Structures are given as C-alpha cells and as structure tokens.
Length: 312
Image 1 (cartoon, rainbow, N blue to C red):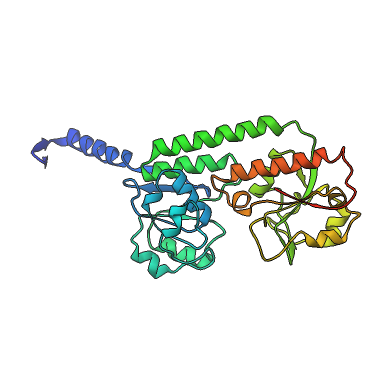
Image 2: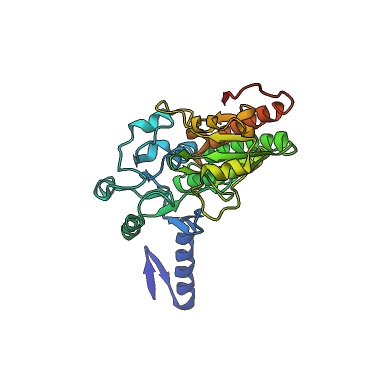
C-alpha cells in the first residue's frame, strides 16, 4: 500500500494513479521543435535567456520576451533596449564563463554563429538550446511563435507573427506576377562573394520576382570573380552595404559601363541590417528589395544615358 499526502493507494489502482500523475507532470512541460529539428523542452517558461546572434535577439523581443534576455552578443543593437543587454562575446567567440555566470535557462543560438567546439561545450552545460536559422521568410514568424511558447509570452508572439504574415502575404500578392529581373547579390567585394539559392536572402529575391544568377551554386556563400558576373550580365546588382560609410562597395562595377546593370543605373545599396538578418525586420528589408527591382523594371522603358547608382 502507498501513501501520497494522505491518500492511500492499493495495488493496480495505485500504480495507475502514479502513471497518470507522471504523465500530467510531463504534459506541463513546454516543448517545441527548433530549426535543426531538435526538441527543446523546458519545465516552465524561460526567465533568463541568452541570445547568441543579433537576429535571435530581435526574434525574442518580437516574441514579447525581450525583458528576459540577460545576455547577448555584439551587434545585438535592435530594438534600442537591446543595446543595454550585457555582452557575452560575438558570433564567432563566446565567453563561456561569463555566460554561465548569467545562469540562463534558455540559449537561442545561430547554427553558423559560435565556433563548433564552443557549441559542444554549451551542449555539455545542460542548458536548453534553441537553434534559430530561418531558411525562408515564412519561417521567421514561425520562430517567433515557438520562442513565445518557450518564454510563456504566447499571445504577444502570436500577434507579432500574425502581423508579419499579413505583410508577407501582401508582398507576395503584389509581386508574384511581376516580370523577372536577373540580379547579382553582392555580399562583399573583396573577396567577391554572393549567396546561393538556398539562403533566405534568395527567398526574398524570389518573392520580389528576382532571379539570383548564382542561385544554383552548391556553397551557401560562394566566392565568384568579376569575369563570371560579367559573363552573366545581370540586369541589377544588389548589396546590403547602405549603412557602411567607409567605402562604396558597388564602385568596382562602374569600370564596366557595358554591363547591363551599370548601363541602366541598377546598382542598389540596401540596408543590410534589414535584409541580411533573418529576424522580424527582414520582411521590411524584402519590401525595399522589391521596390528596387521595380525601379529596374521601369528603367527598361527609359534607357539611361549614363550609369548612376540607385540607392534605396
């Protein structure tokens, strides 16, 4: 015979009661799948969150749990409240001791962020990890919902996600039937590299009716050369360096006035924080990209007498 807080349980009925009690306890746990397909389980909503990528910080704020972030990495600068969060390192190097001292109950990690050896150390700490790497724009609101569930801020997260899905649907309706624009997406000029079709930026390009000329390359961020770009002769060149004041990273293309993008003035510098971070502001970044490609379409009817840079 068993006794639990004054209840006397006999035989099979007692065992059944314990099984039901155990199942009820498990049902109270919070479980979600992360972007790597792993199950993340918490006994109760997270109260002390550390985000190990700037976009992860933005996602947690969007989910209504920004006040629970106790540590973040460099460049976690949006929204403004994120600037006051203590730093635990950068995307490439995390201060493990400082992180442990913050006593987090949830880590939100970028798959391509901290060094792999550090990720193994983080797993060894036993702190639940949520891997965030949206591959498509529609994955961004999904991440927000799941983070809201982990933080116990479901209603706020659902509201934010719904707003983003509405914006995304409006963009799809507006641009899904527009004539295609072949473009080169320039991540960095020296060395010159781009993104393939599996990157989330390419999903934004497709949304806007663009065609990534190097979308078929196998590497996620392949290095290319100027000759390969000239051979493809894209109608537009896009880069996410609008906020960089130290250099004009589209300047190298002006040396090739016969290139279609240069001839028509379709060299566009966009806000990299909006377009490159797979967080809630990327929908806004995609809208800016769509507007740039619409300018390129209009210029088909207006031959440009000289190459100029279009900046959005």
